[in-house]
Amino acid sequence: MNILIVDDQEKILEATKKLVDWKKLHIDGVYTAASADAAREILEQHPVDIMLTDIEMPGEDGISLQKWAAQNYPYIYCIFLTSHADFSYAKEAIRGGAFDYILQPASIEEIEETLERCIQTLEERKDILQKSDRYEKLTEQTDYPEERKPDSARWGKWLIRGDYTLVRNQLVNLLRLADQDGYLTIPYRQQMIHALLEACSVACYEKKFELEKLFTGDFTYENMLGCYHTDKELTDGMDKMLYLYKKLVAETEGREEGSYTVQERIREVIRFLDENMDRMVSRREAAKYVFLNEDYFSRMFRKETGMGFKEYQLKLKMEYAGKLLSSTTMPVTLIASKAGYENFTNFSQMFKKVMGQSPTEYRKEKGKE
Image (tube, rainbow, N blue to C red):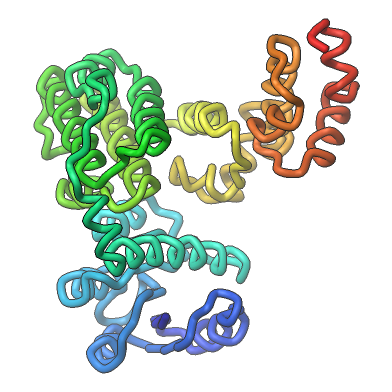
């Protein structure tokens, strides 16, 4: 697997090339270019899987370069590096089909983490395309219960009344059940995409704005149609659509784009944490979810909640675990997993720190032992 790094600052190019652990990431070739023109030449002469590029460069910028690469080398994944924590840059990056963007200054660990996720997605796609027998199976039309059919009419009603979480949760649950029962094929994912698009179309009509307006922000209609290769790709696309729909509804109800307030964004993050209780959400991921600079997000989160992000997430998880301990007979190890902890000892220590008792003591006191 090969990567191309594009940046007009030679020091950044050399530092990135030298400090990132390419061997750990299983990257074979690392090419560098100081301009868009130089990058084009490399892309024309060498196979490249990932392009890591700056946005602001003299002459042609990184967004223009990515659009050209997407037309000529559509299988290349692009990650943007930018020192501008401006929402318009994020919109441009995602609209062009970028895999992700990284706000500078960024740590090497952050760059490596983003590259790891990108490589994983690339390998998932390659696995589908290369294993023809598996690909044929994934493209088969399969039978499934009628109640598992994506329900665009119901989703449309939920969107109209603002129940975005219901739509997202049902999509995620349908994916989980389809995988569990063996009918999670590409056509099934495509049905889910079309049902979501139809639901958005119905909701947009009811709210009196064109569906096309939904795709002038983060990504295109075609981008959404193509989100069928993996579950993560589909859920990421769904999250973008729901985010843009909510934002557009707010604007048409008399608020400007900028009035997507910090308070609203923090509430969105709290909801996001609640929906992802079974894993650890990083501060960086939470900040990016609502398009805020990480440091600024931390300050605003503490201001709005009175707690740091990590402290708040820990409290949320332990309270959730406490409810399961007091209301179910579920094994404590399973409860730990549901709260996002793979290490049971770590979970027990954190639970006692927050709740004042060990999980076993807590359950015994609540009468569920």
